[in-house]
Image 1 (cartoon, rainbow, N blue to C red):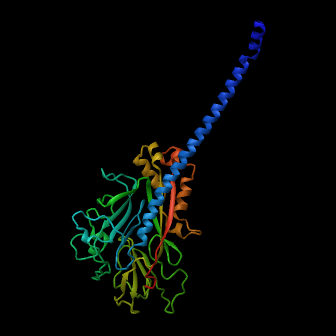
Image 2 (image 1 turned 180 degrees about the horizontal axis):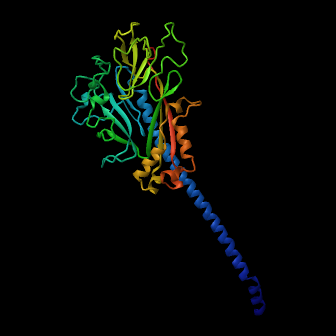
Image 3 (image 1 turned 135 degrees about the vertical axis):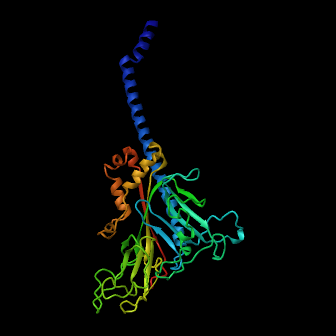
Length: 386
């Protein structure tokens, strides 16, 4: 009976082949589960990186939307939208509270502020970090006679040209050195807004439905029939200085008349002709600041590389500069093509290229994480009848 029980125990045990098969199956299952976990972890990481970039873009655009909504769009108040090679910057007066000088009492604090956005391309420790988006929110007072941080209104010089008095402009009011629109300008009221944002660019949607690098319509539009005199009225959107009383009626081109636009590309300021007697050589033309009269919306685009991806390249400033340079500035031809090629379209084509990562010196996994965002900020324009 003991022998029979032993035989049954032996017959019910696992054989070596069965154990090896079970181990093999278990190993395959473990590998499969490991691959699933790795894929899930990678997907979660990529999703987190996208969410981080989306959240930062939303924060930036919400801040800009609030400032554009409250922007002072009076033609006698300066704004400074700097178009340049590489990252753009812009400054404007807003009816939003800013950071006030600690020496001021709460009684003089107001809702007026100077707001600006720029990509900081230099390292000014300890507060600043290169290749990041910064916002300026400088609290001002409404009393222009105040000795500390007053708001300013444009005052035309009219002594040979219609350039406003320097002290009444943003750059003239905060002249530096360096001037407020220079990368090396420092101010304690600049604060980090986007630590992953390394590219900033803008253009304008004008009230005639066209896109432009300058906030002024090319008046009259192309194709407008010539007047009976045969001398067409034109605009100058590529001037290097302000207009003068002599920029008026002429028997030869260019001939300026009421409604002509003039844009000073040196000081980033537009003008509109409000008076031009039809007498050659009268030197009596009158030009006024254009303000945002021709702008329907400001189009802003940003490029973001999340912090996790920046760690892979150790936030190398040279690489970040190369990435920013690879995202080209729009040209007039881009904006007037059919359809218009705005920043987001151009940049997405660039980062989607198979050679993008290698051309800027980053691993492919980093190049694939560059995110492009663009938003239209529509203005409630009060000066379309100028």
